[in-house]
Amino acid sequence: MRALVYQGPFDVAVKDVADARIEDPKDAIVRITTTNICGSDLHMYEGRTDVEEGKVLGHENMGIVESVGDAVERIKVGDRVSLPFNIACGTCDNCFKGLTGFCLRANPGSAGAAYGYASMGPYNGGQAEYLRVPWADFNALVLPEGTEHELDYTMLSDIFPTGWHGVELAKMQPGETVVIYGAGPVGLMAAHSAAIKGASRVFVVDHQPDRLKLAEQVGAIPIDRSTGDSVERITDLTDGGADRGVDAVGYQAHSPDGTEQPEIVLNELVAAVKPTGGIGVVGVYVPQDPGAEGELAKEGKLAFDYGTFFFKGQSMGTGQCNTKQYNARLRDLITEGVATPGFLVSHELNLDQAAEGYDHFDKREDGWTKVVLHP
Ligand SMILES: NC(=O)c1ccc[n+]([C@@H]2O[C@H](COP(=O)([O-])OP(=O)(O)OC[C@H]3O[C@@H](n4cnc5c(N)ncnc54)[C@H](O)[C@@H]3O)[C@@H](O)[C@H]2O)c1
Ligand SMILES: [Zn+2]
Ligand SMILES: [Zn+2]
Image (tube, rainbow, N blue to C red; front, side, top):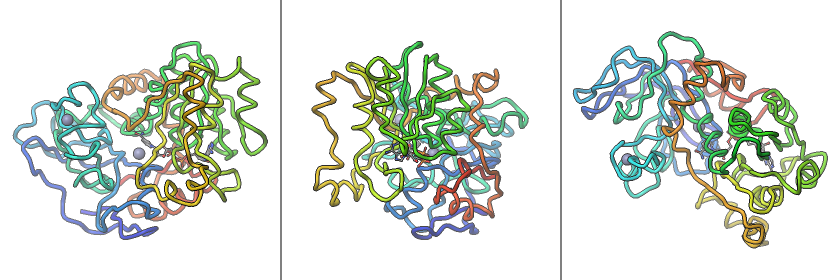
């Protein structure tokens, strides 16, 4: 089958690889109709991980069930399914509690498993014609038949639930104000989620005008940090800070001109959220981040200001999204026309154009917000 493989930093290519096949009676094989390039793929693409050469990438997958193993009971050949990026067994202690991003069996000894991802288990990704889905009954979410809402449903495998998770981790209640740092796909999904969940006002902070325009499109108030201090503006527009905040940037925060990484975005977030407010962190921080041991860290510039966080009596939730906790409900919001996360999609390409897609998306070229591949 054809699949996109990692060959080295800034080098991915579509190649012939071994067919995805049933390896366990609980597996299913899914013919991929739609799979997305994610900001998280860029951590590997840019060579910041130990992902092995030849790994098939792609963790945002949906398609049609092609075949099922003997122990699969619920999912049927021909079902249209969305696959959460987390691979989870469904029966370990964490899965039982709904914490499927931290399954104890799918990638023992580490924190969670995913398709096509460095250090997240031996599983190949779905930027390919076919994908092997372990524990298929538990992991596959069945979608309405047909092709309606394809671009909305394709957001169910990762970034829509992840944005929703950010707002959940911040413990937002209807009527509250929320500030979201980062107007990338995840931040925009958090803004869309906060609006659906009844936020009174949603502020989105970034320095990329095209992305801030999309934030406005979902009803958020754009705050362009290249033209002034975001914390001052949010403090002025609220009663001394937003009720809730979401970090949808992570360790790759940078200044508007793109040159330096002056400070982790978390400190700005702590400052922009009111005393006793809640913060949700879905932007990725990694223990092996070179920045964490670099010059900036030595100067104390990447350090989290725990003292201010403590002094303000805030709370914080972190981590990978437990996609399965939300995806059925979010699917129904899409089906009912309440949620329209597909507004993000800027480009639809076929698999053979995937390397091109990575290149444009990685450069964060104007207009390249979210790339969808149709193998
Ligand atoms: N927790 C999870 O389960 C999960 C799932 C998917 C993605 N992620 C992570 O979420 C993060 C965001 O993903 P994305 O695809 O939206 O990435 P992205 O790179 O497309 O978007 C990040 C945005 O942040 C902006 N930005 C940079 N520095 C900033 C700063 N100091 N202040 C405000 N904005 C700033 C950038 O201009 C960009 O628009 C990544 O770290 C990604 O790996 C986490
Ligand atoms: Zn993703
Ligand atoms: Zn499990």
